[in-house]
Image (cartoon, rainbow, N blue to C red; front, side, top):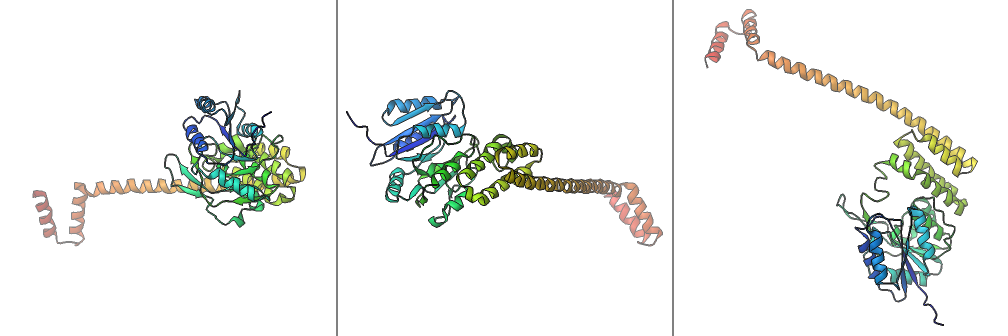
Length: 370
């Protein structure tokens, strides 16, 4: 009986309506130079464009490398990621979504070498090139920080500094991964960091594409829309993180407070929805504390709205006053240019001795004749 070769690394990719990008993504996987066997696991979330056809085309061409899953209905990014992870056979797991790609053919080998040589590390990542598809902003690198000492669990609990297409994990059990959370990648980073240290390779080896179809494209400019669509799964993320790290509640609660503050700052009409979600997801002590903080934020927001309304009213009064003055000045200019005004001015000059009457009359007649 032939023994099945051991797969060293699994590339896990999730896709949804990314026909314009998926070829570049897959080609960046196939260019990898790895000394061991690797597989490509792709799970498509019931795309309605030609993404699935393109995936099938590659799978038929490289049947020994590809392992695909085509969802029958749209299940969402978290569930789609979980299904893909469950199919992965590799000792290590590298992530990349279907609209991003890798730019270094040695990426897999470098990360495999790192984890092979550092058994106390459970994941490693590297900086990425961030670019806007239509050139809205200049390219950048994330993270800019290059000191590996700052990439700790404590700091990862504060912020997600690991880009999805830069990470490689030492594989764990994924059967109990929650599917009602967003962003799923932050949870996965923290889930793997539970069993080891976070490694950093200071080499840009992938590219992260910013485009209008991305989930978080309007995260800062349209927070109301983001809350309406992703608010509940985002709060669920913190609830799940607290289950893994109950001893780090202070850092997690700080993130929850920041999220709630952002929602209230944008709009107060979702407050009741938020309170309901908070009560459902967190224990009574924590939910009471968060709701109290939320209510304070709402009261502060309403006070700001009153002040804004008063300032807007005053600003409109000033605009109206300026418009009135402009109109009056215009009428005054017309009056001064009229014959009657000029005649009156001359008469006043003569009567009150402001100017010599003969000189004034001569000037007036000369101007009229000229």
